[in-house]
Amino acid sequence: MKPLASVRSPRRGRVLGVIVVLALLTVLPGCASPRPPETDPTIRGVVVSVTPGAEGGVIRVVWHESLGEPYDLDSIDATVNDATGLFDREGNPIEFSDIEVRYVVDVWVSGPIAESYPPQGGADAVRVIGEFDEIRPLPIPPGLIEP
Image (cartoon, rainbow, N blue to C red; front, top):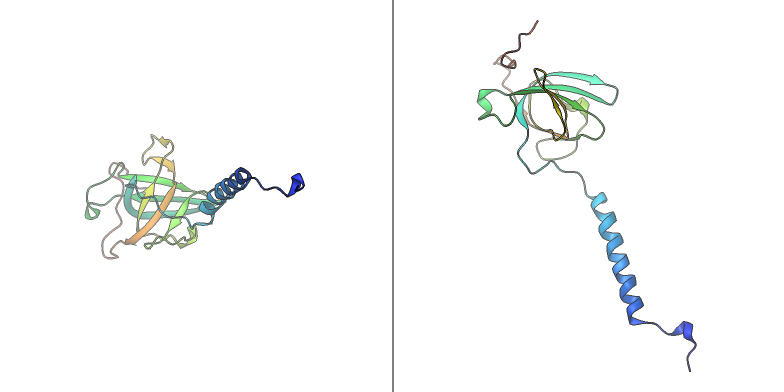
């Protein structure tokens, strides 16, 4: 007769396998590189100002008619922080310092948006998709009078 400790239960092996698979499913998504959202952005527009801050900064983005129909907003002061995903045209991660005036960007905002003008909100993600022609003047949000 075999000692009890040396007998392997088929059920015990399956349970261990399920635990290993669940652990891998929990850990592996964290290893994947971040990607821009696959949904429509809140706004597509031209970066008209970049204001660095302690943990990122604020970019003012203004829609221009040359970019097609507007999405949800025609302008926004989007706050960028450590939780904001920043991406280049190919979807590779970039830094806040890589964003420049005249870049055309898509911005995703899912949290509250202040009812100021231009609206203000925290950016979940920003993707640079191109550059605004240097010959044209930068757009200003409709209804906003620059000093």
